[in-house]
Image (cartoon, rainbow, N blue to C red; front, top):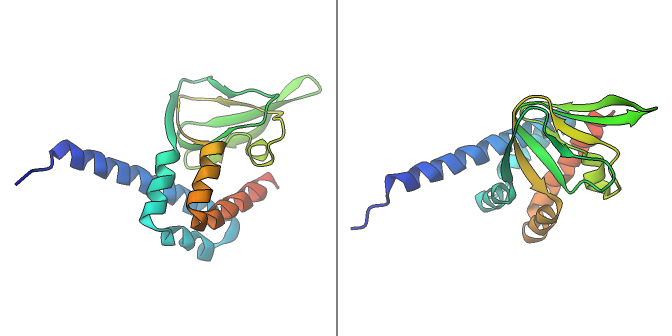
Amino acid sequence: MYQIPSYIHIKTNHCQQIMEHIFESISNLIRKSSGEEYANEVNLLAMETKMAFANLLERREYPKGAVIKVPGKPASEVYIVKKGLLCNTMLNDGKEIGAGFYAEGSIGGDIISFLTRLPSKRTSRLLEPGILWVIDSKKLEAFYVAYPAAQKTGRLLYNYVIYIQQ
């Protein structure tokens, strides 16, 4: 009988832990803006849907001070902060001002530009070394087509964006 190598089990368990961490973060964000009932709906997504979402994410590590988005073009990515502190800044009368801070477990970047596809006015940079899960807009749209049940979770996350912008 064929034995599955132990490193396969470790990799599978590691992927599942990552997925659980990501969906716990998403559930917590939805809870803040829409309440417990809607946060619990994240848990009702099929495992296949959750795995597909986790697979569209790209893990990136950045040093302190790394600029990951500059103004001028629509934001094609947003980020789930696994580790570190992400900051958005913008120019106001020639002075750089803070326009959003995103700690571990938050979704950050220029989310409004990401959603509207309008040119960004923000710079996104890491204030400390960071690990980000990157969500690419084209991959996300393809995911929603393939997994329409996940669209409600996406809309609830948009509610969170509106909530934090107030």
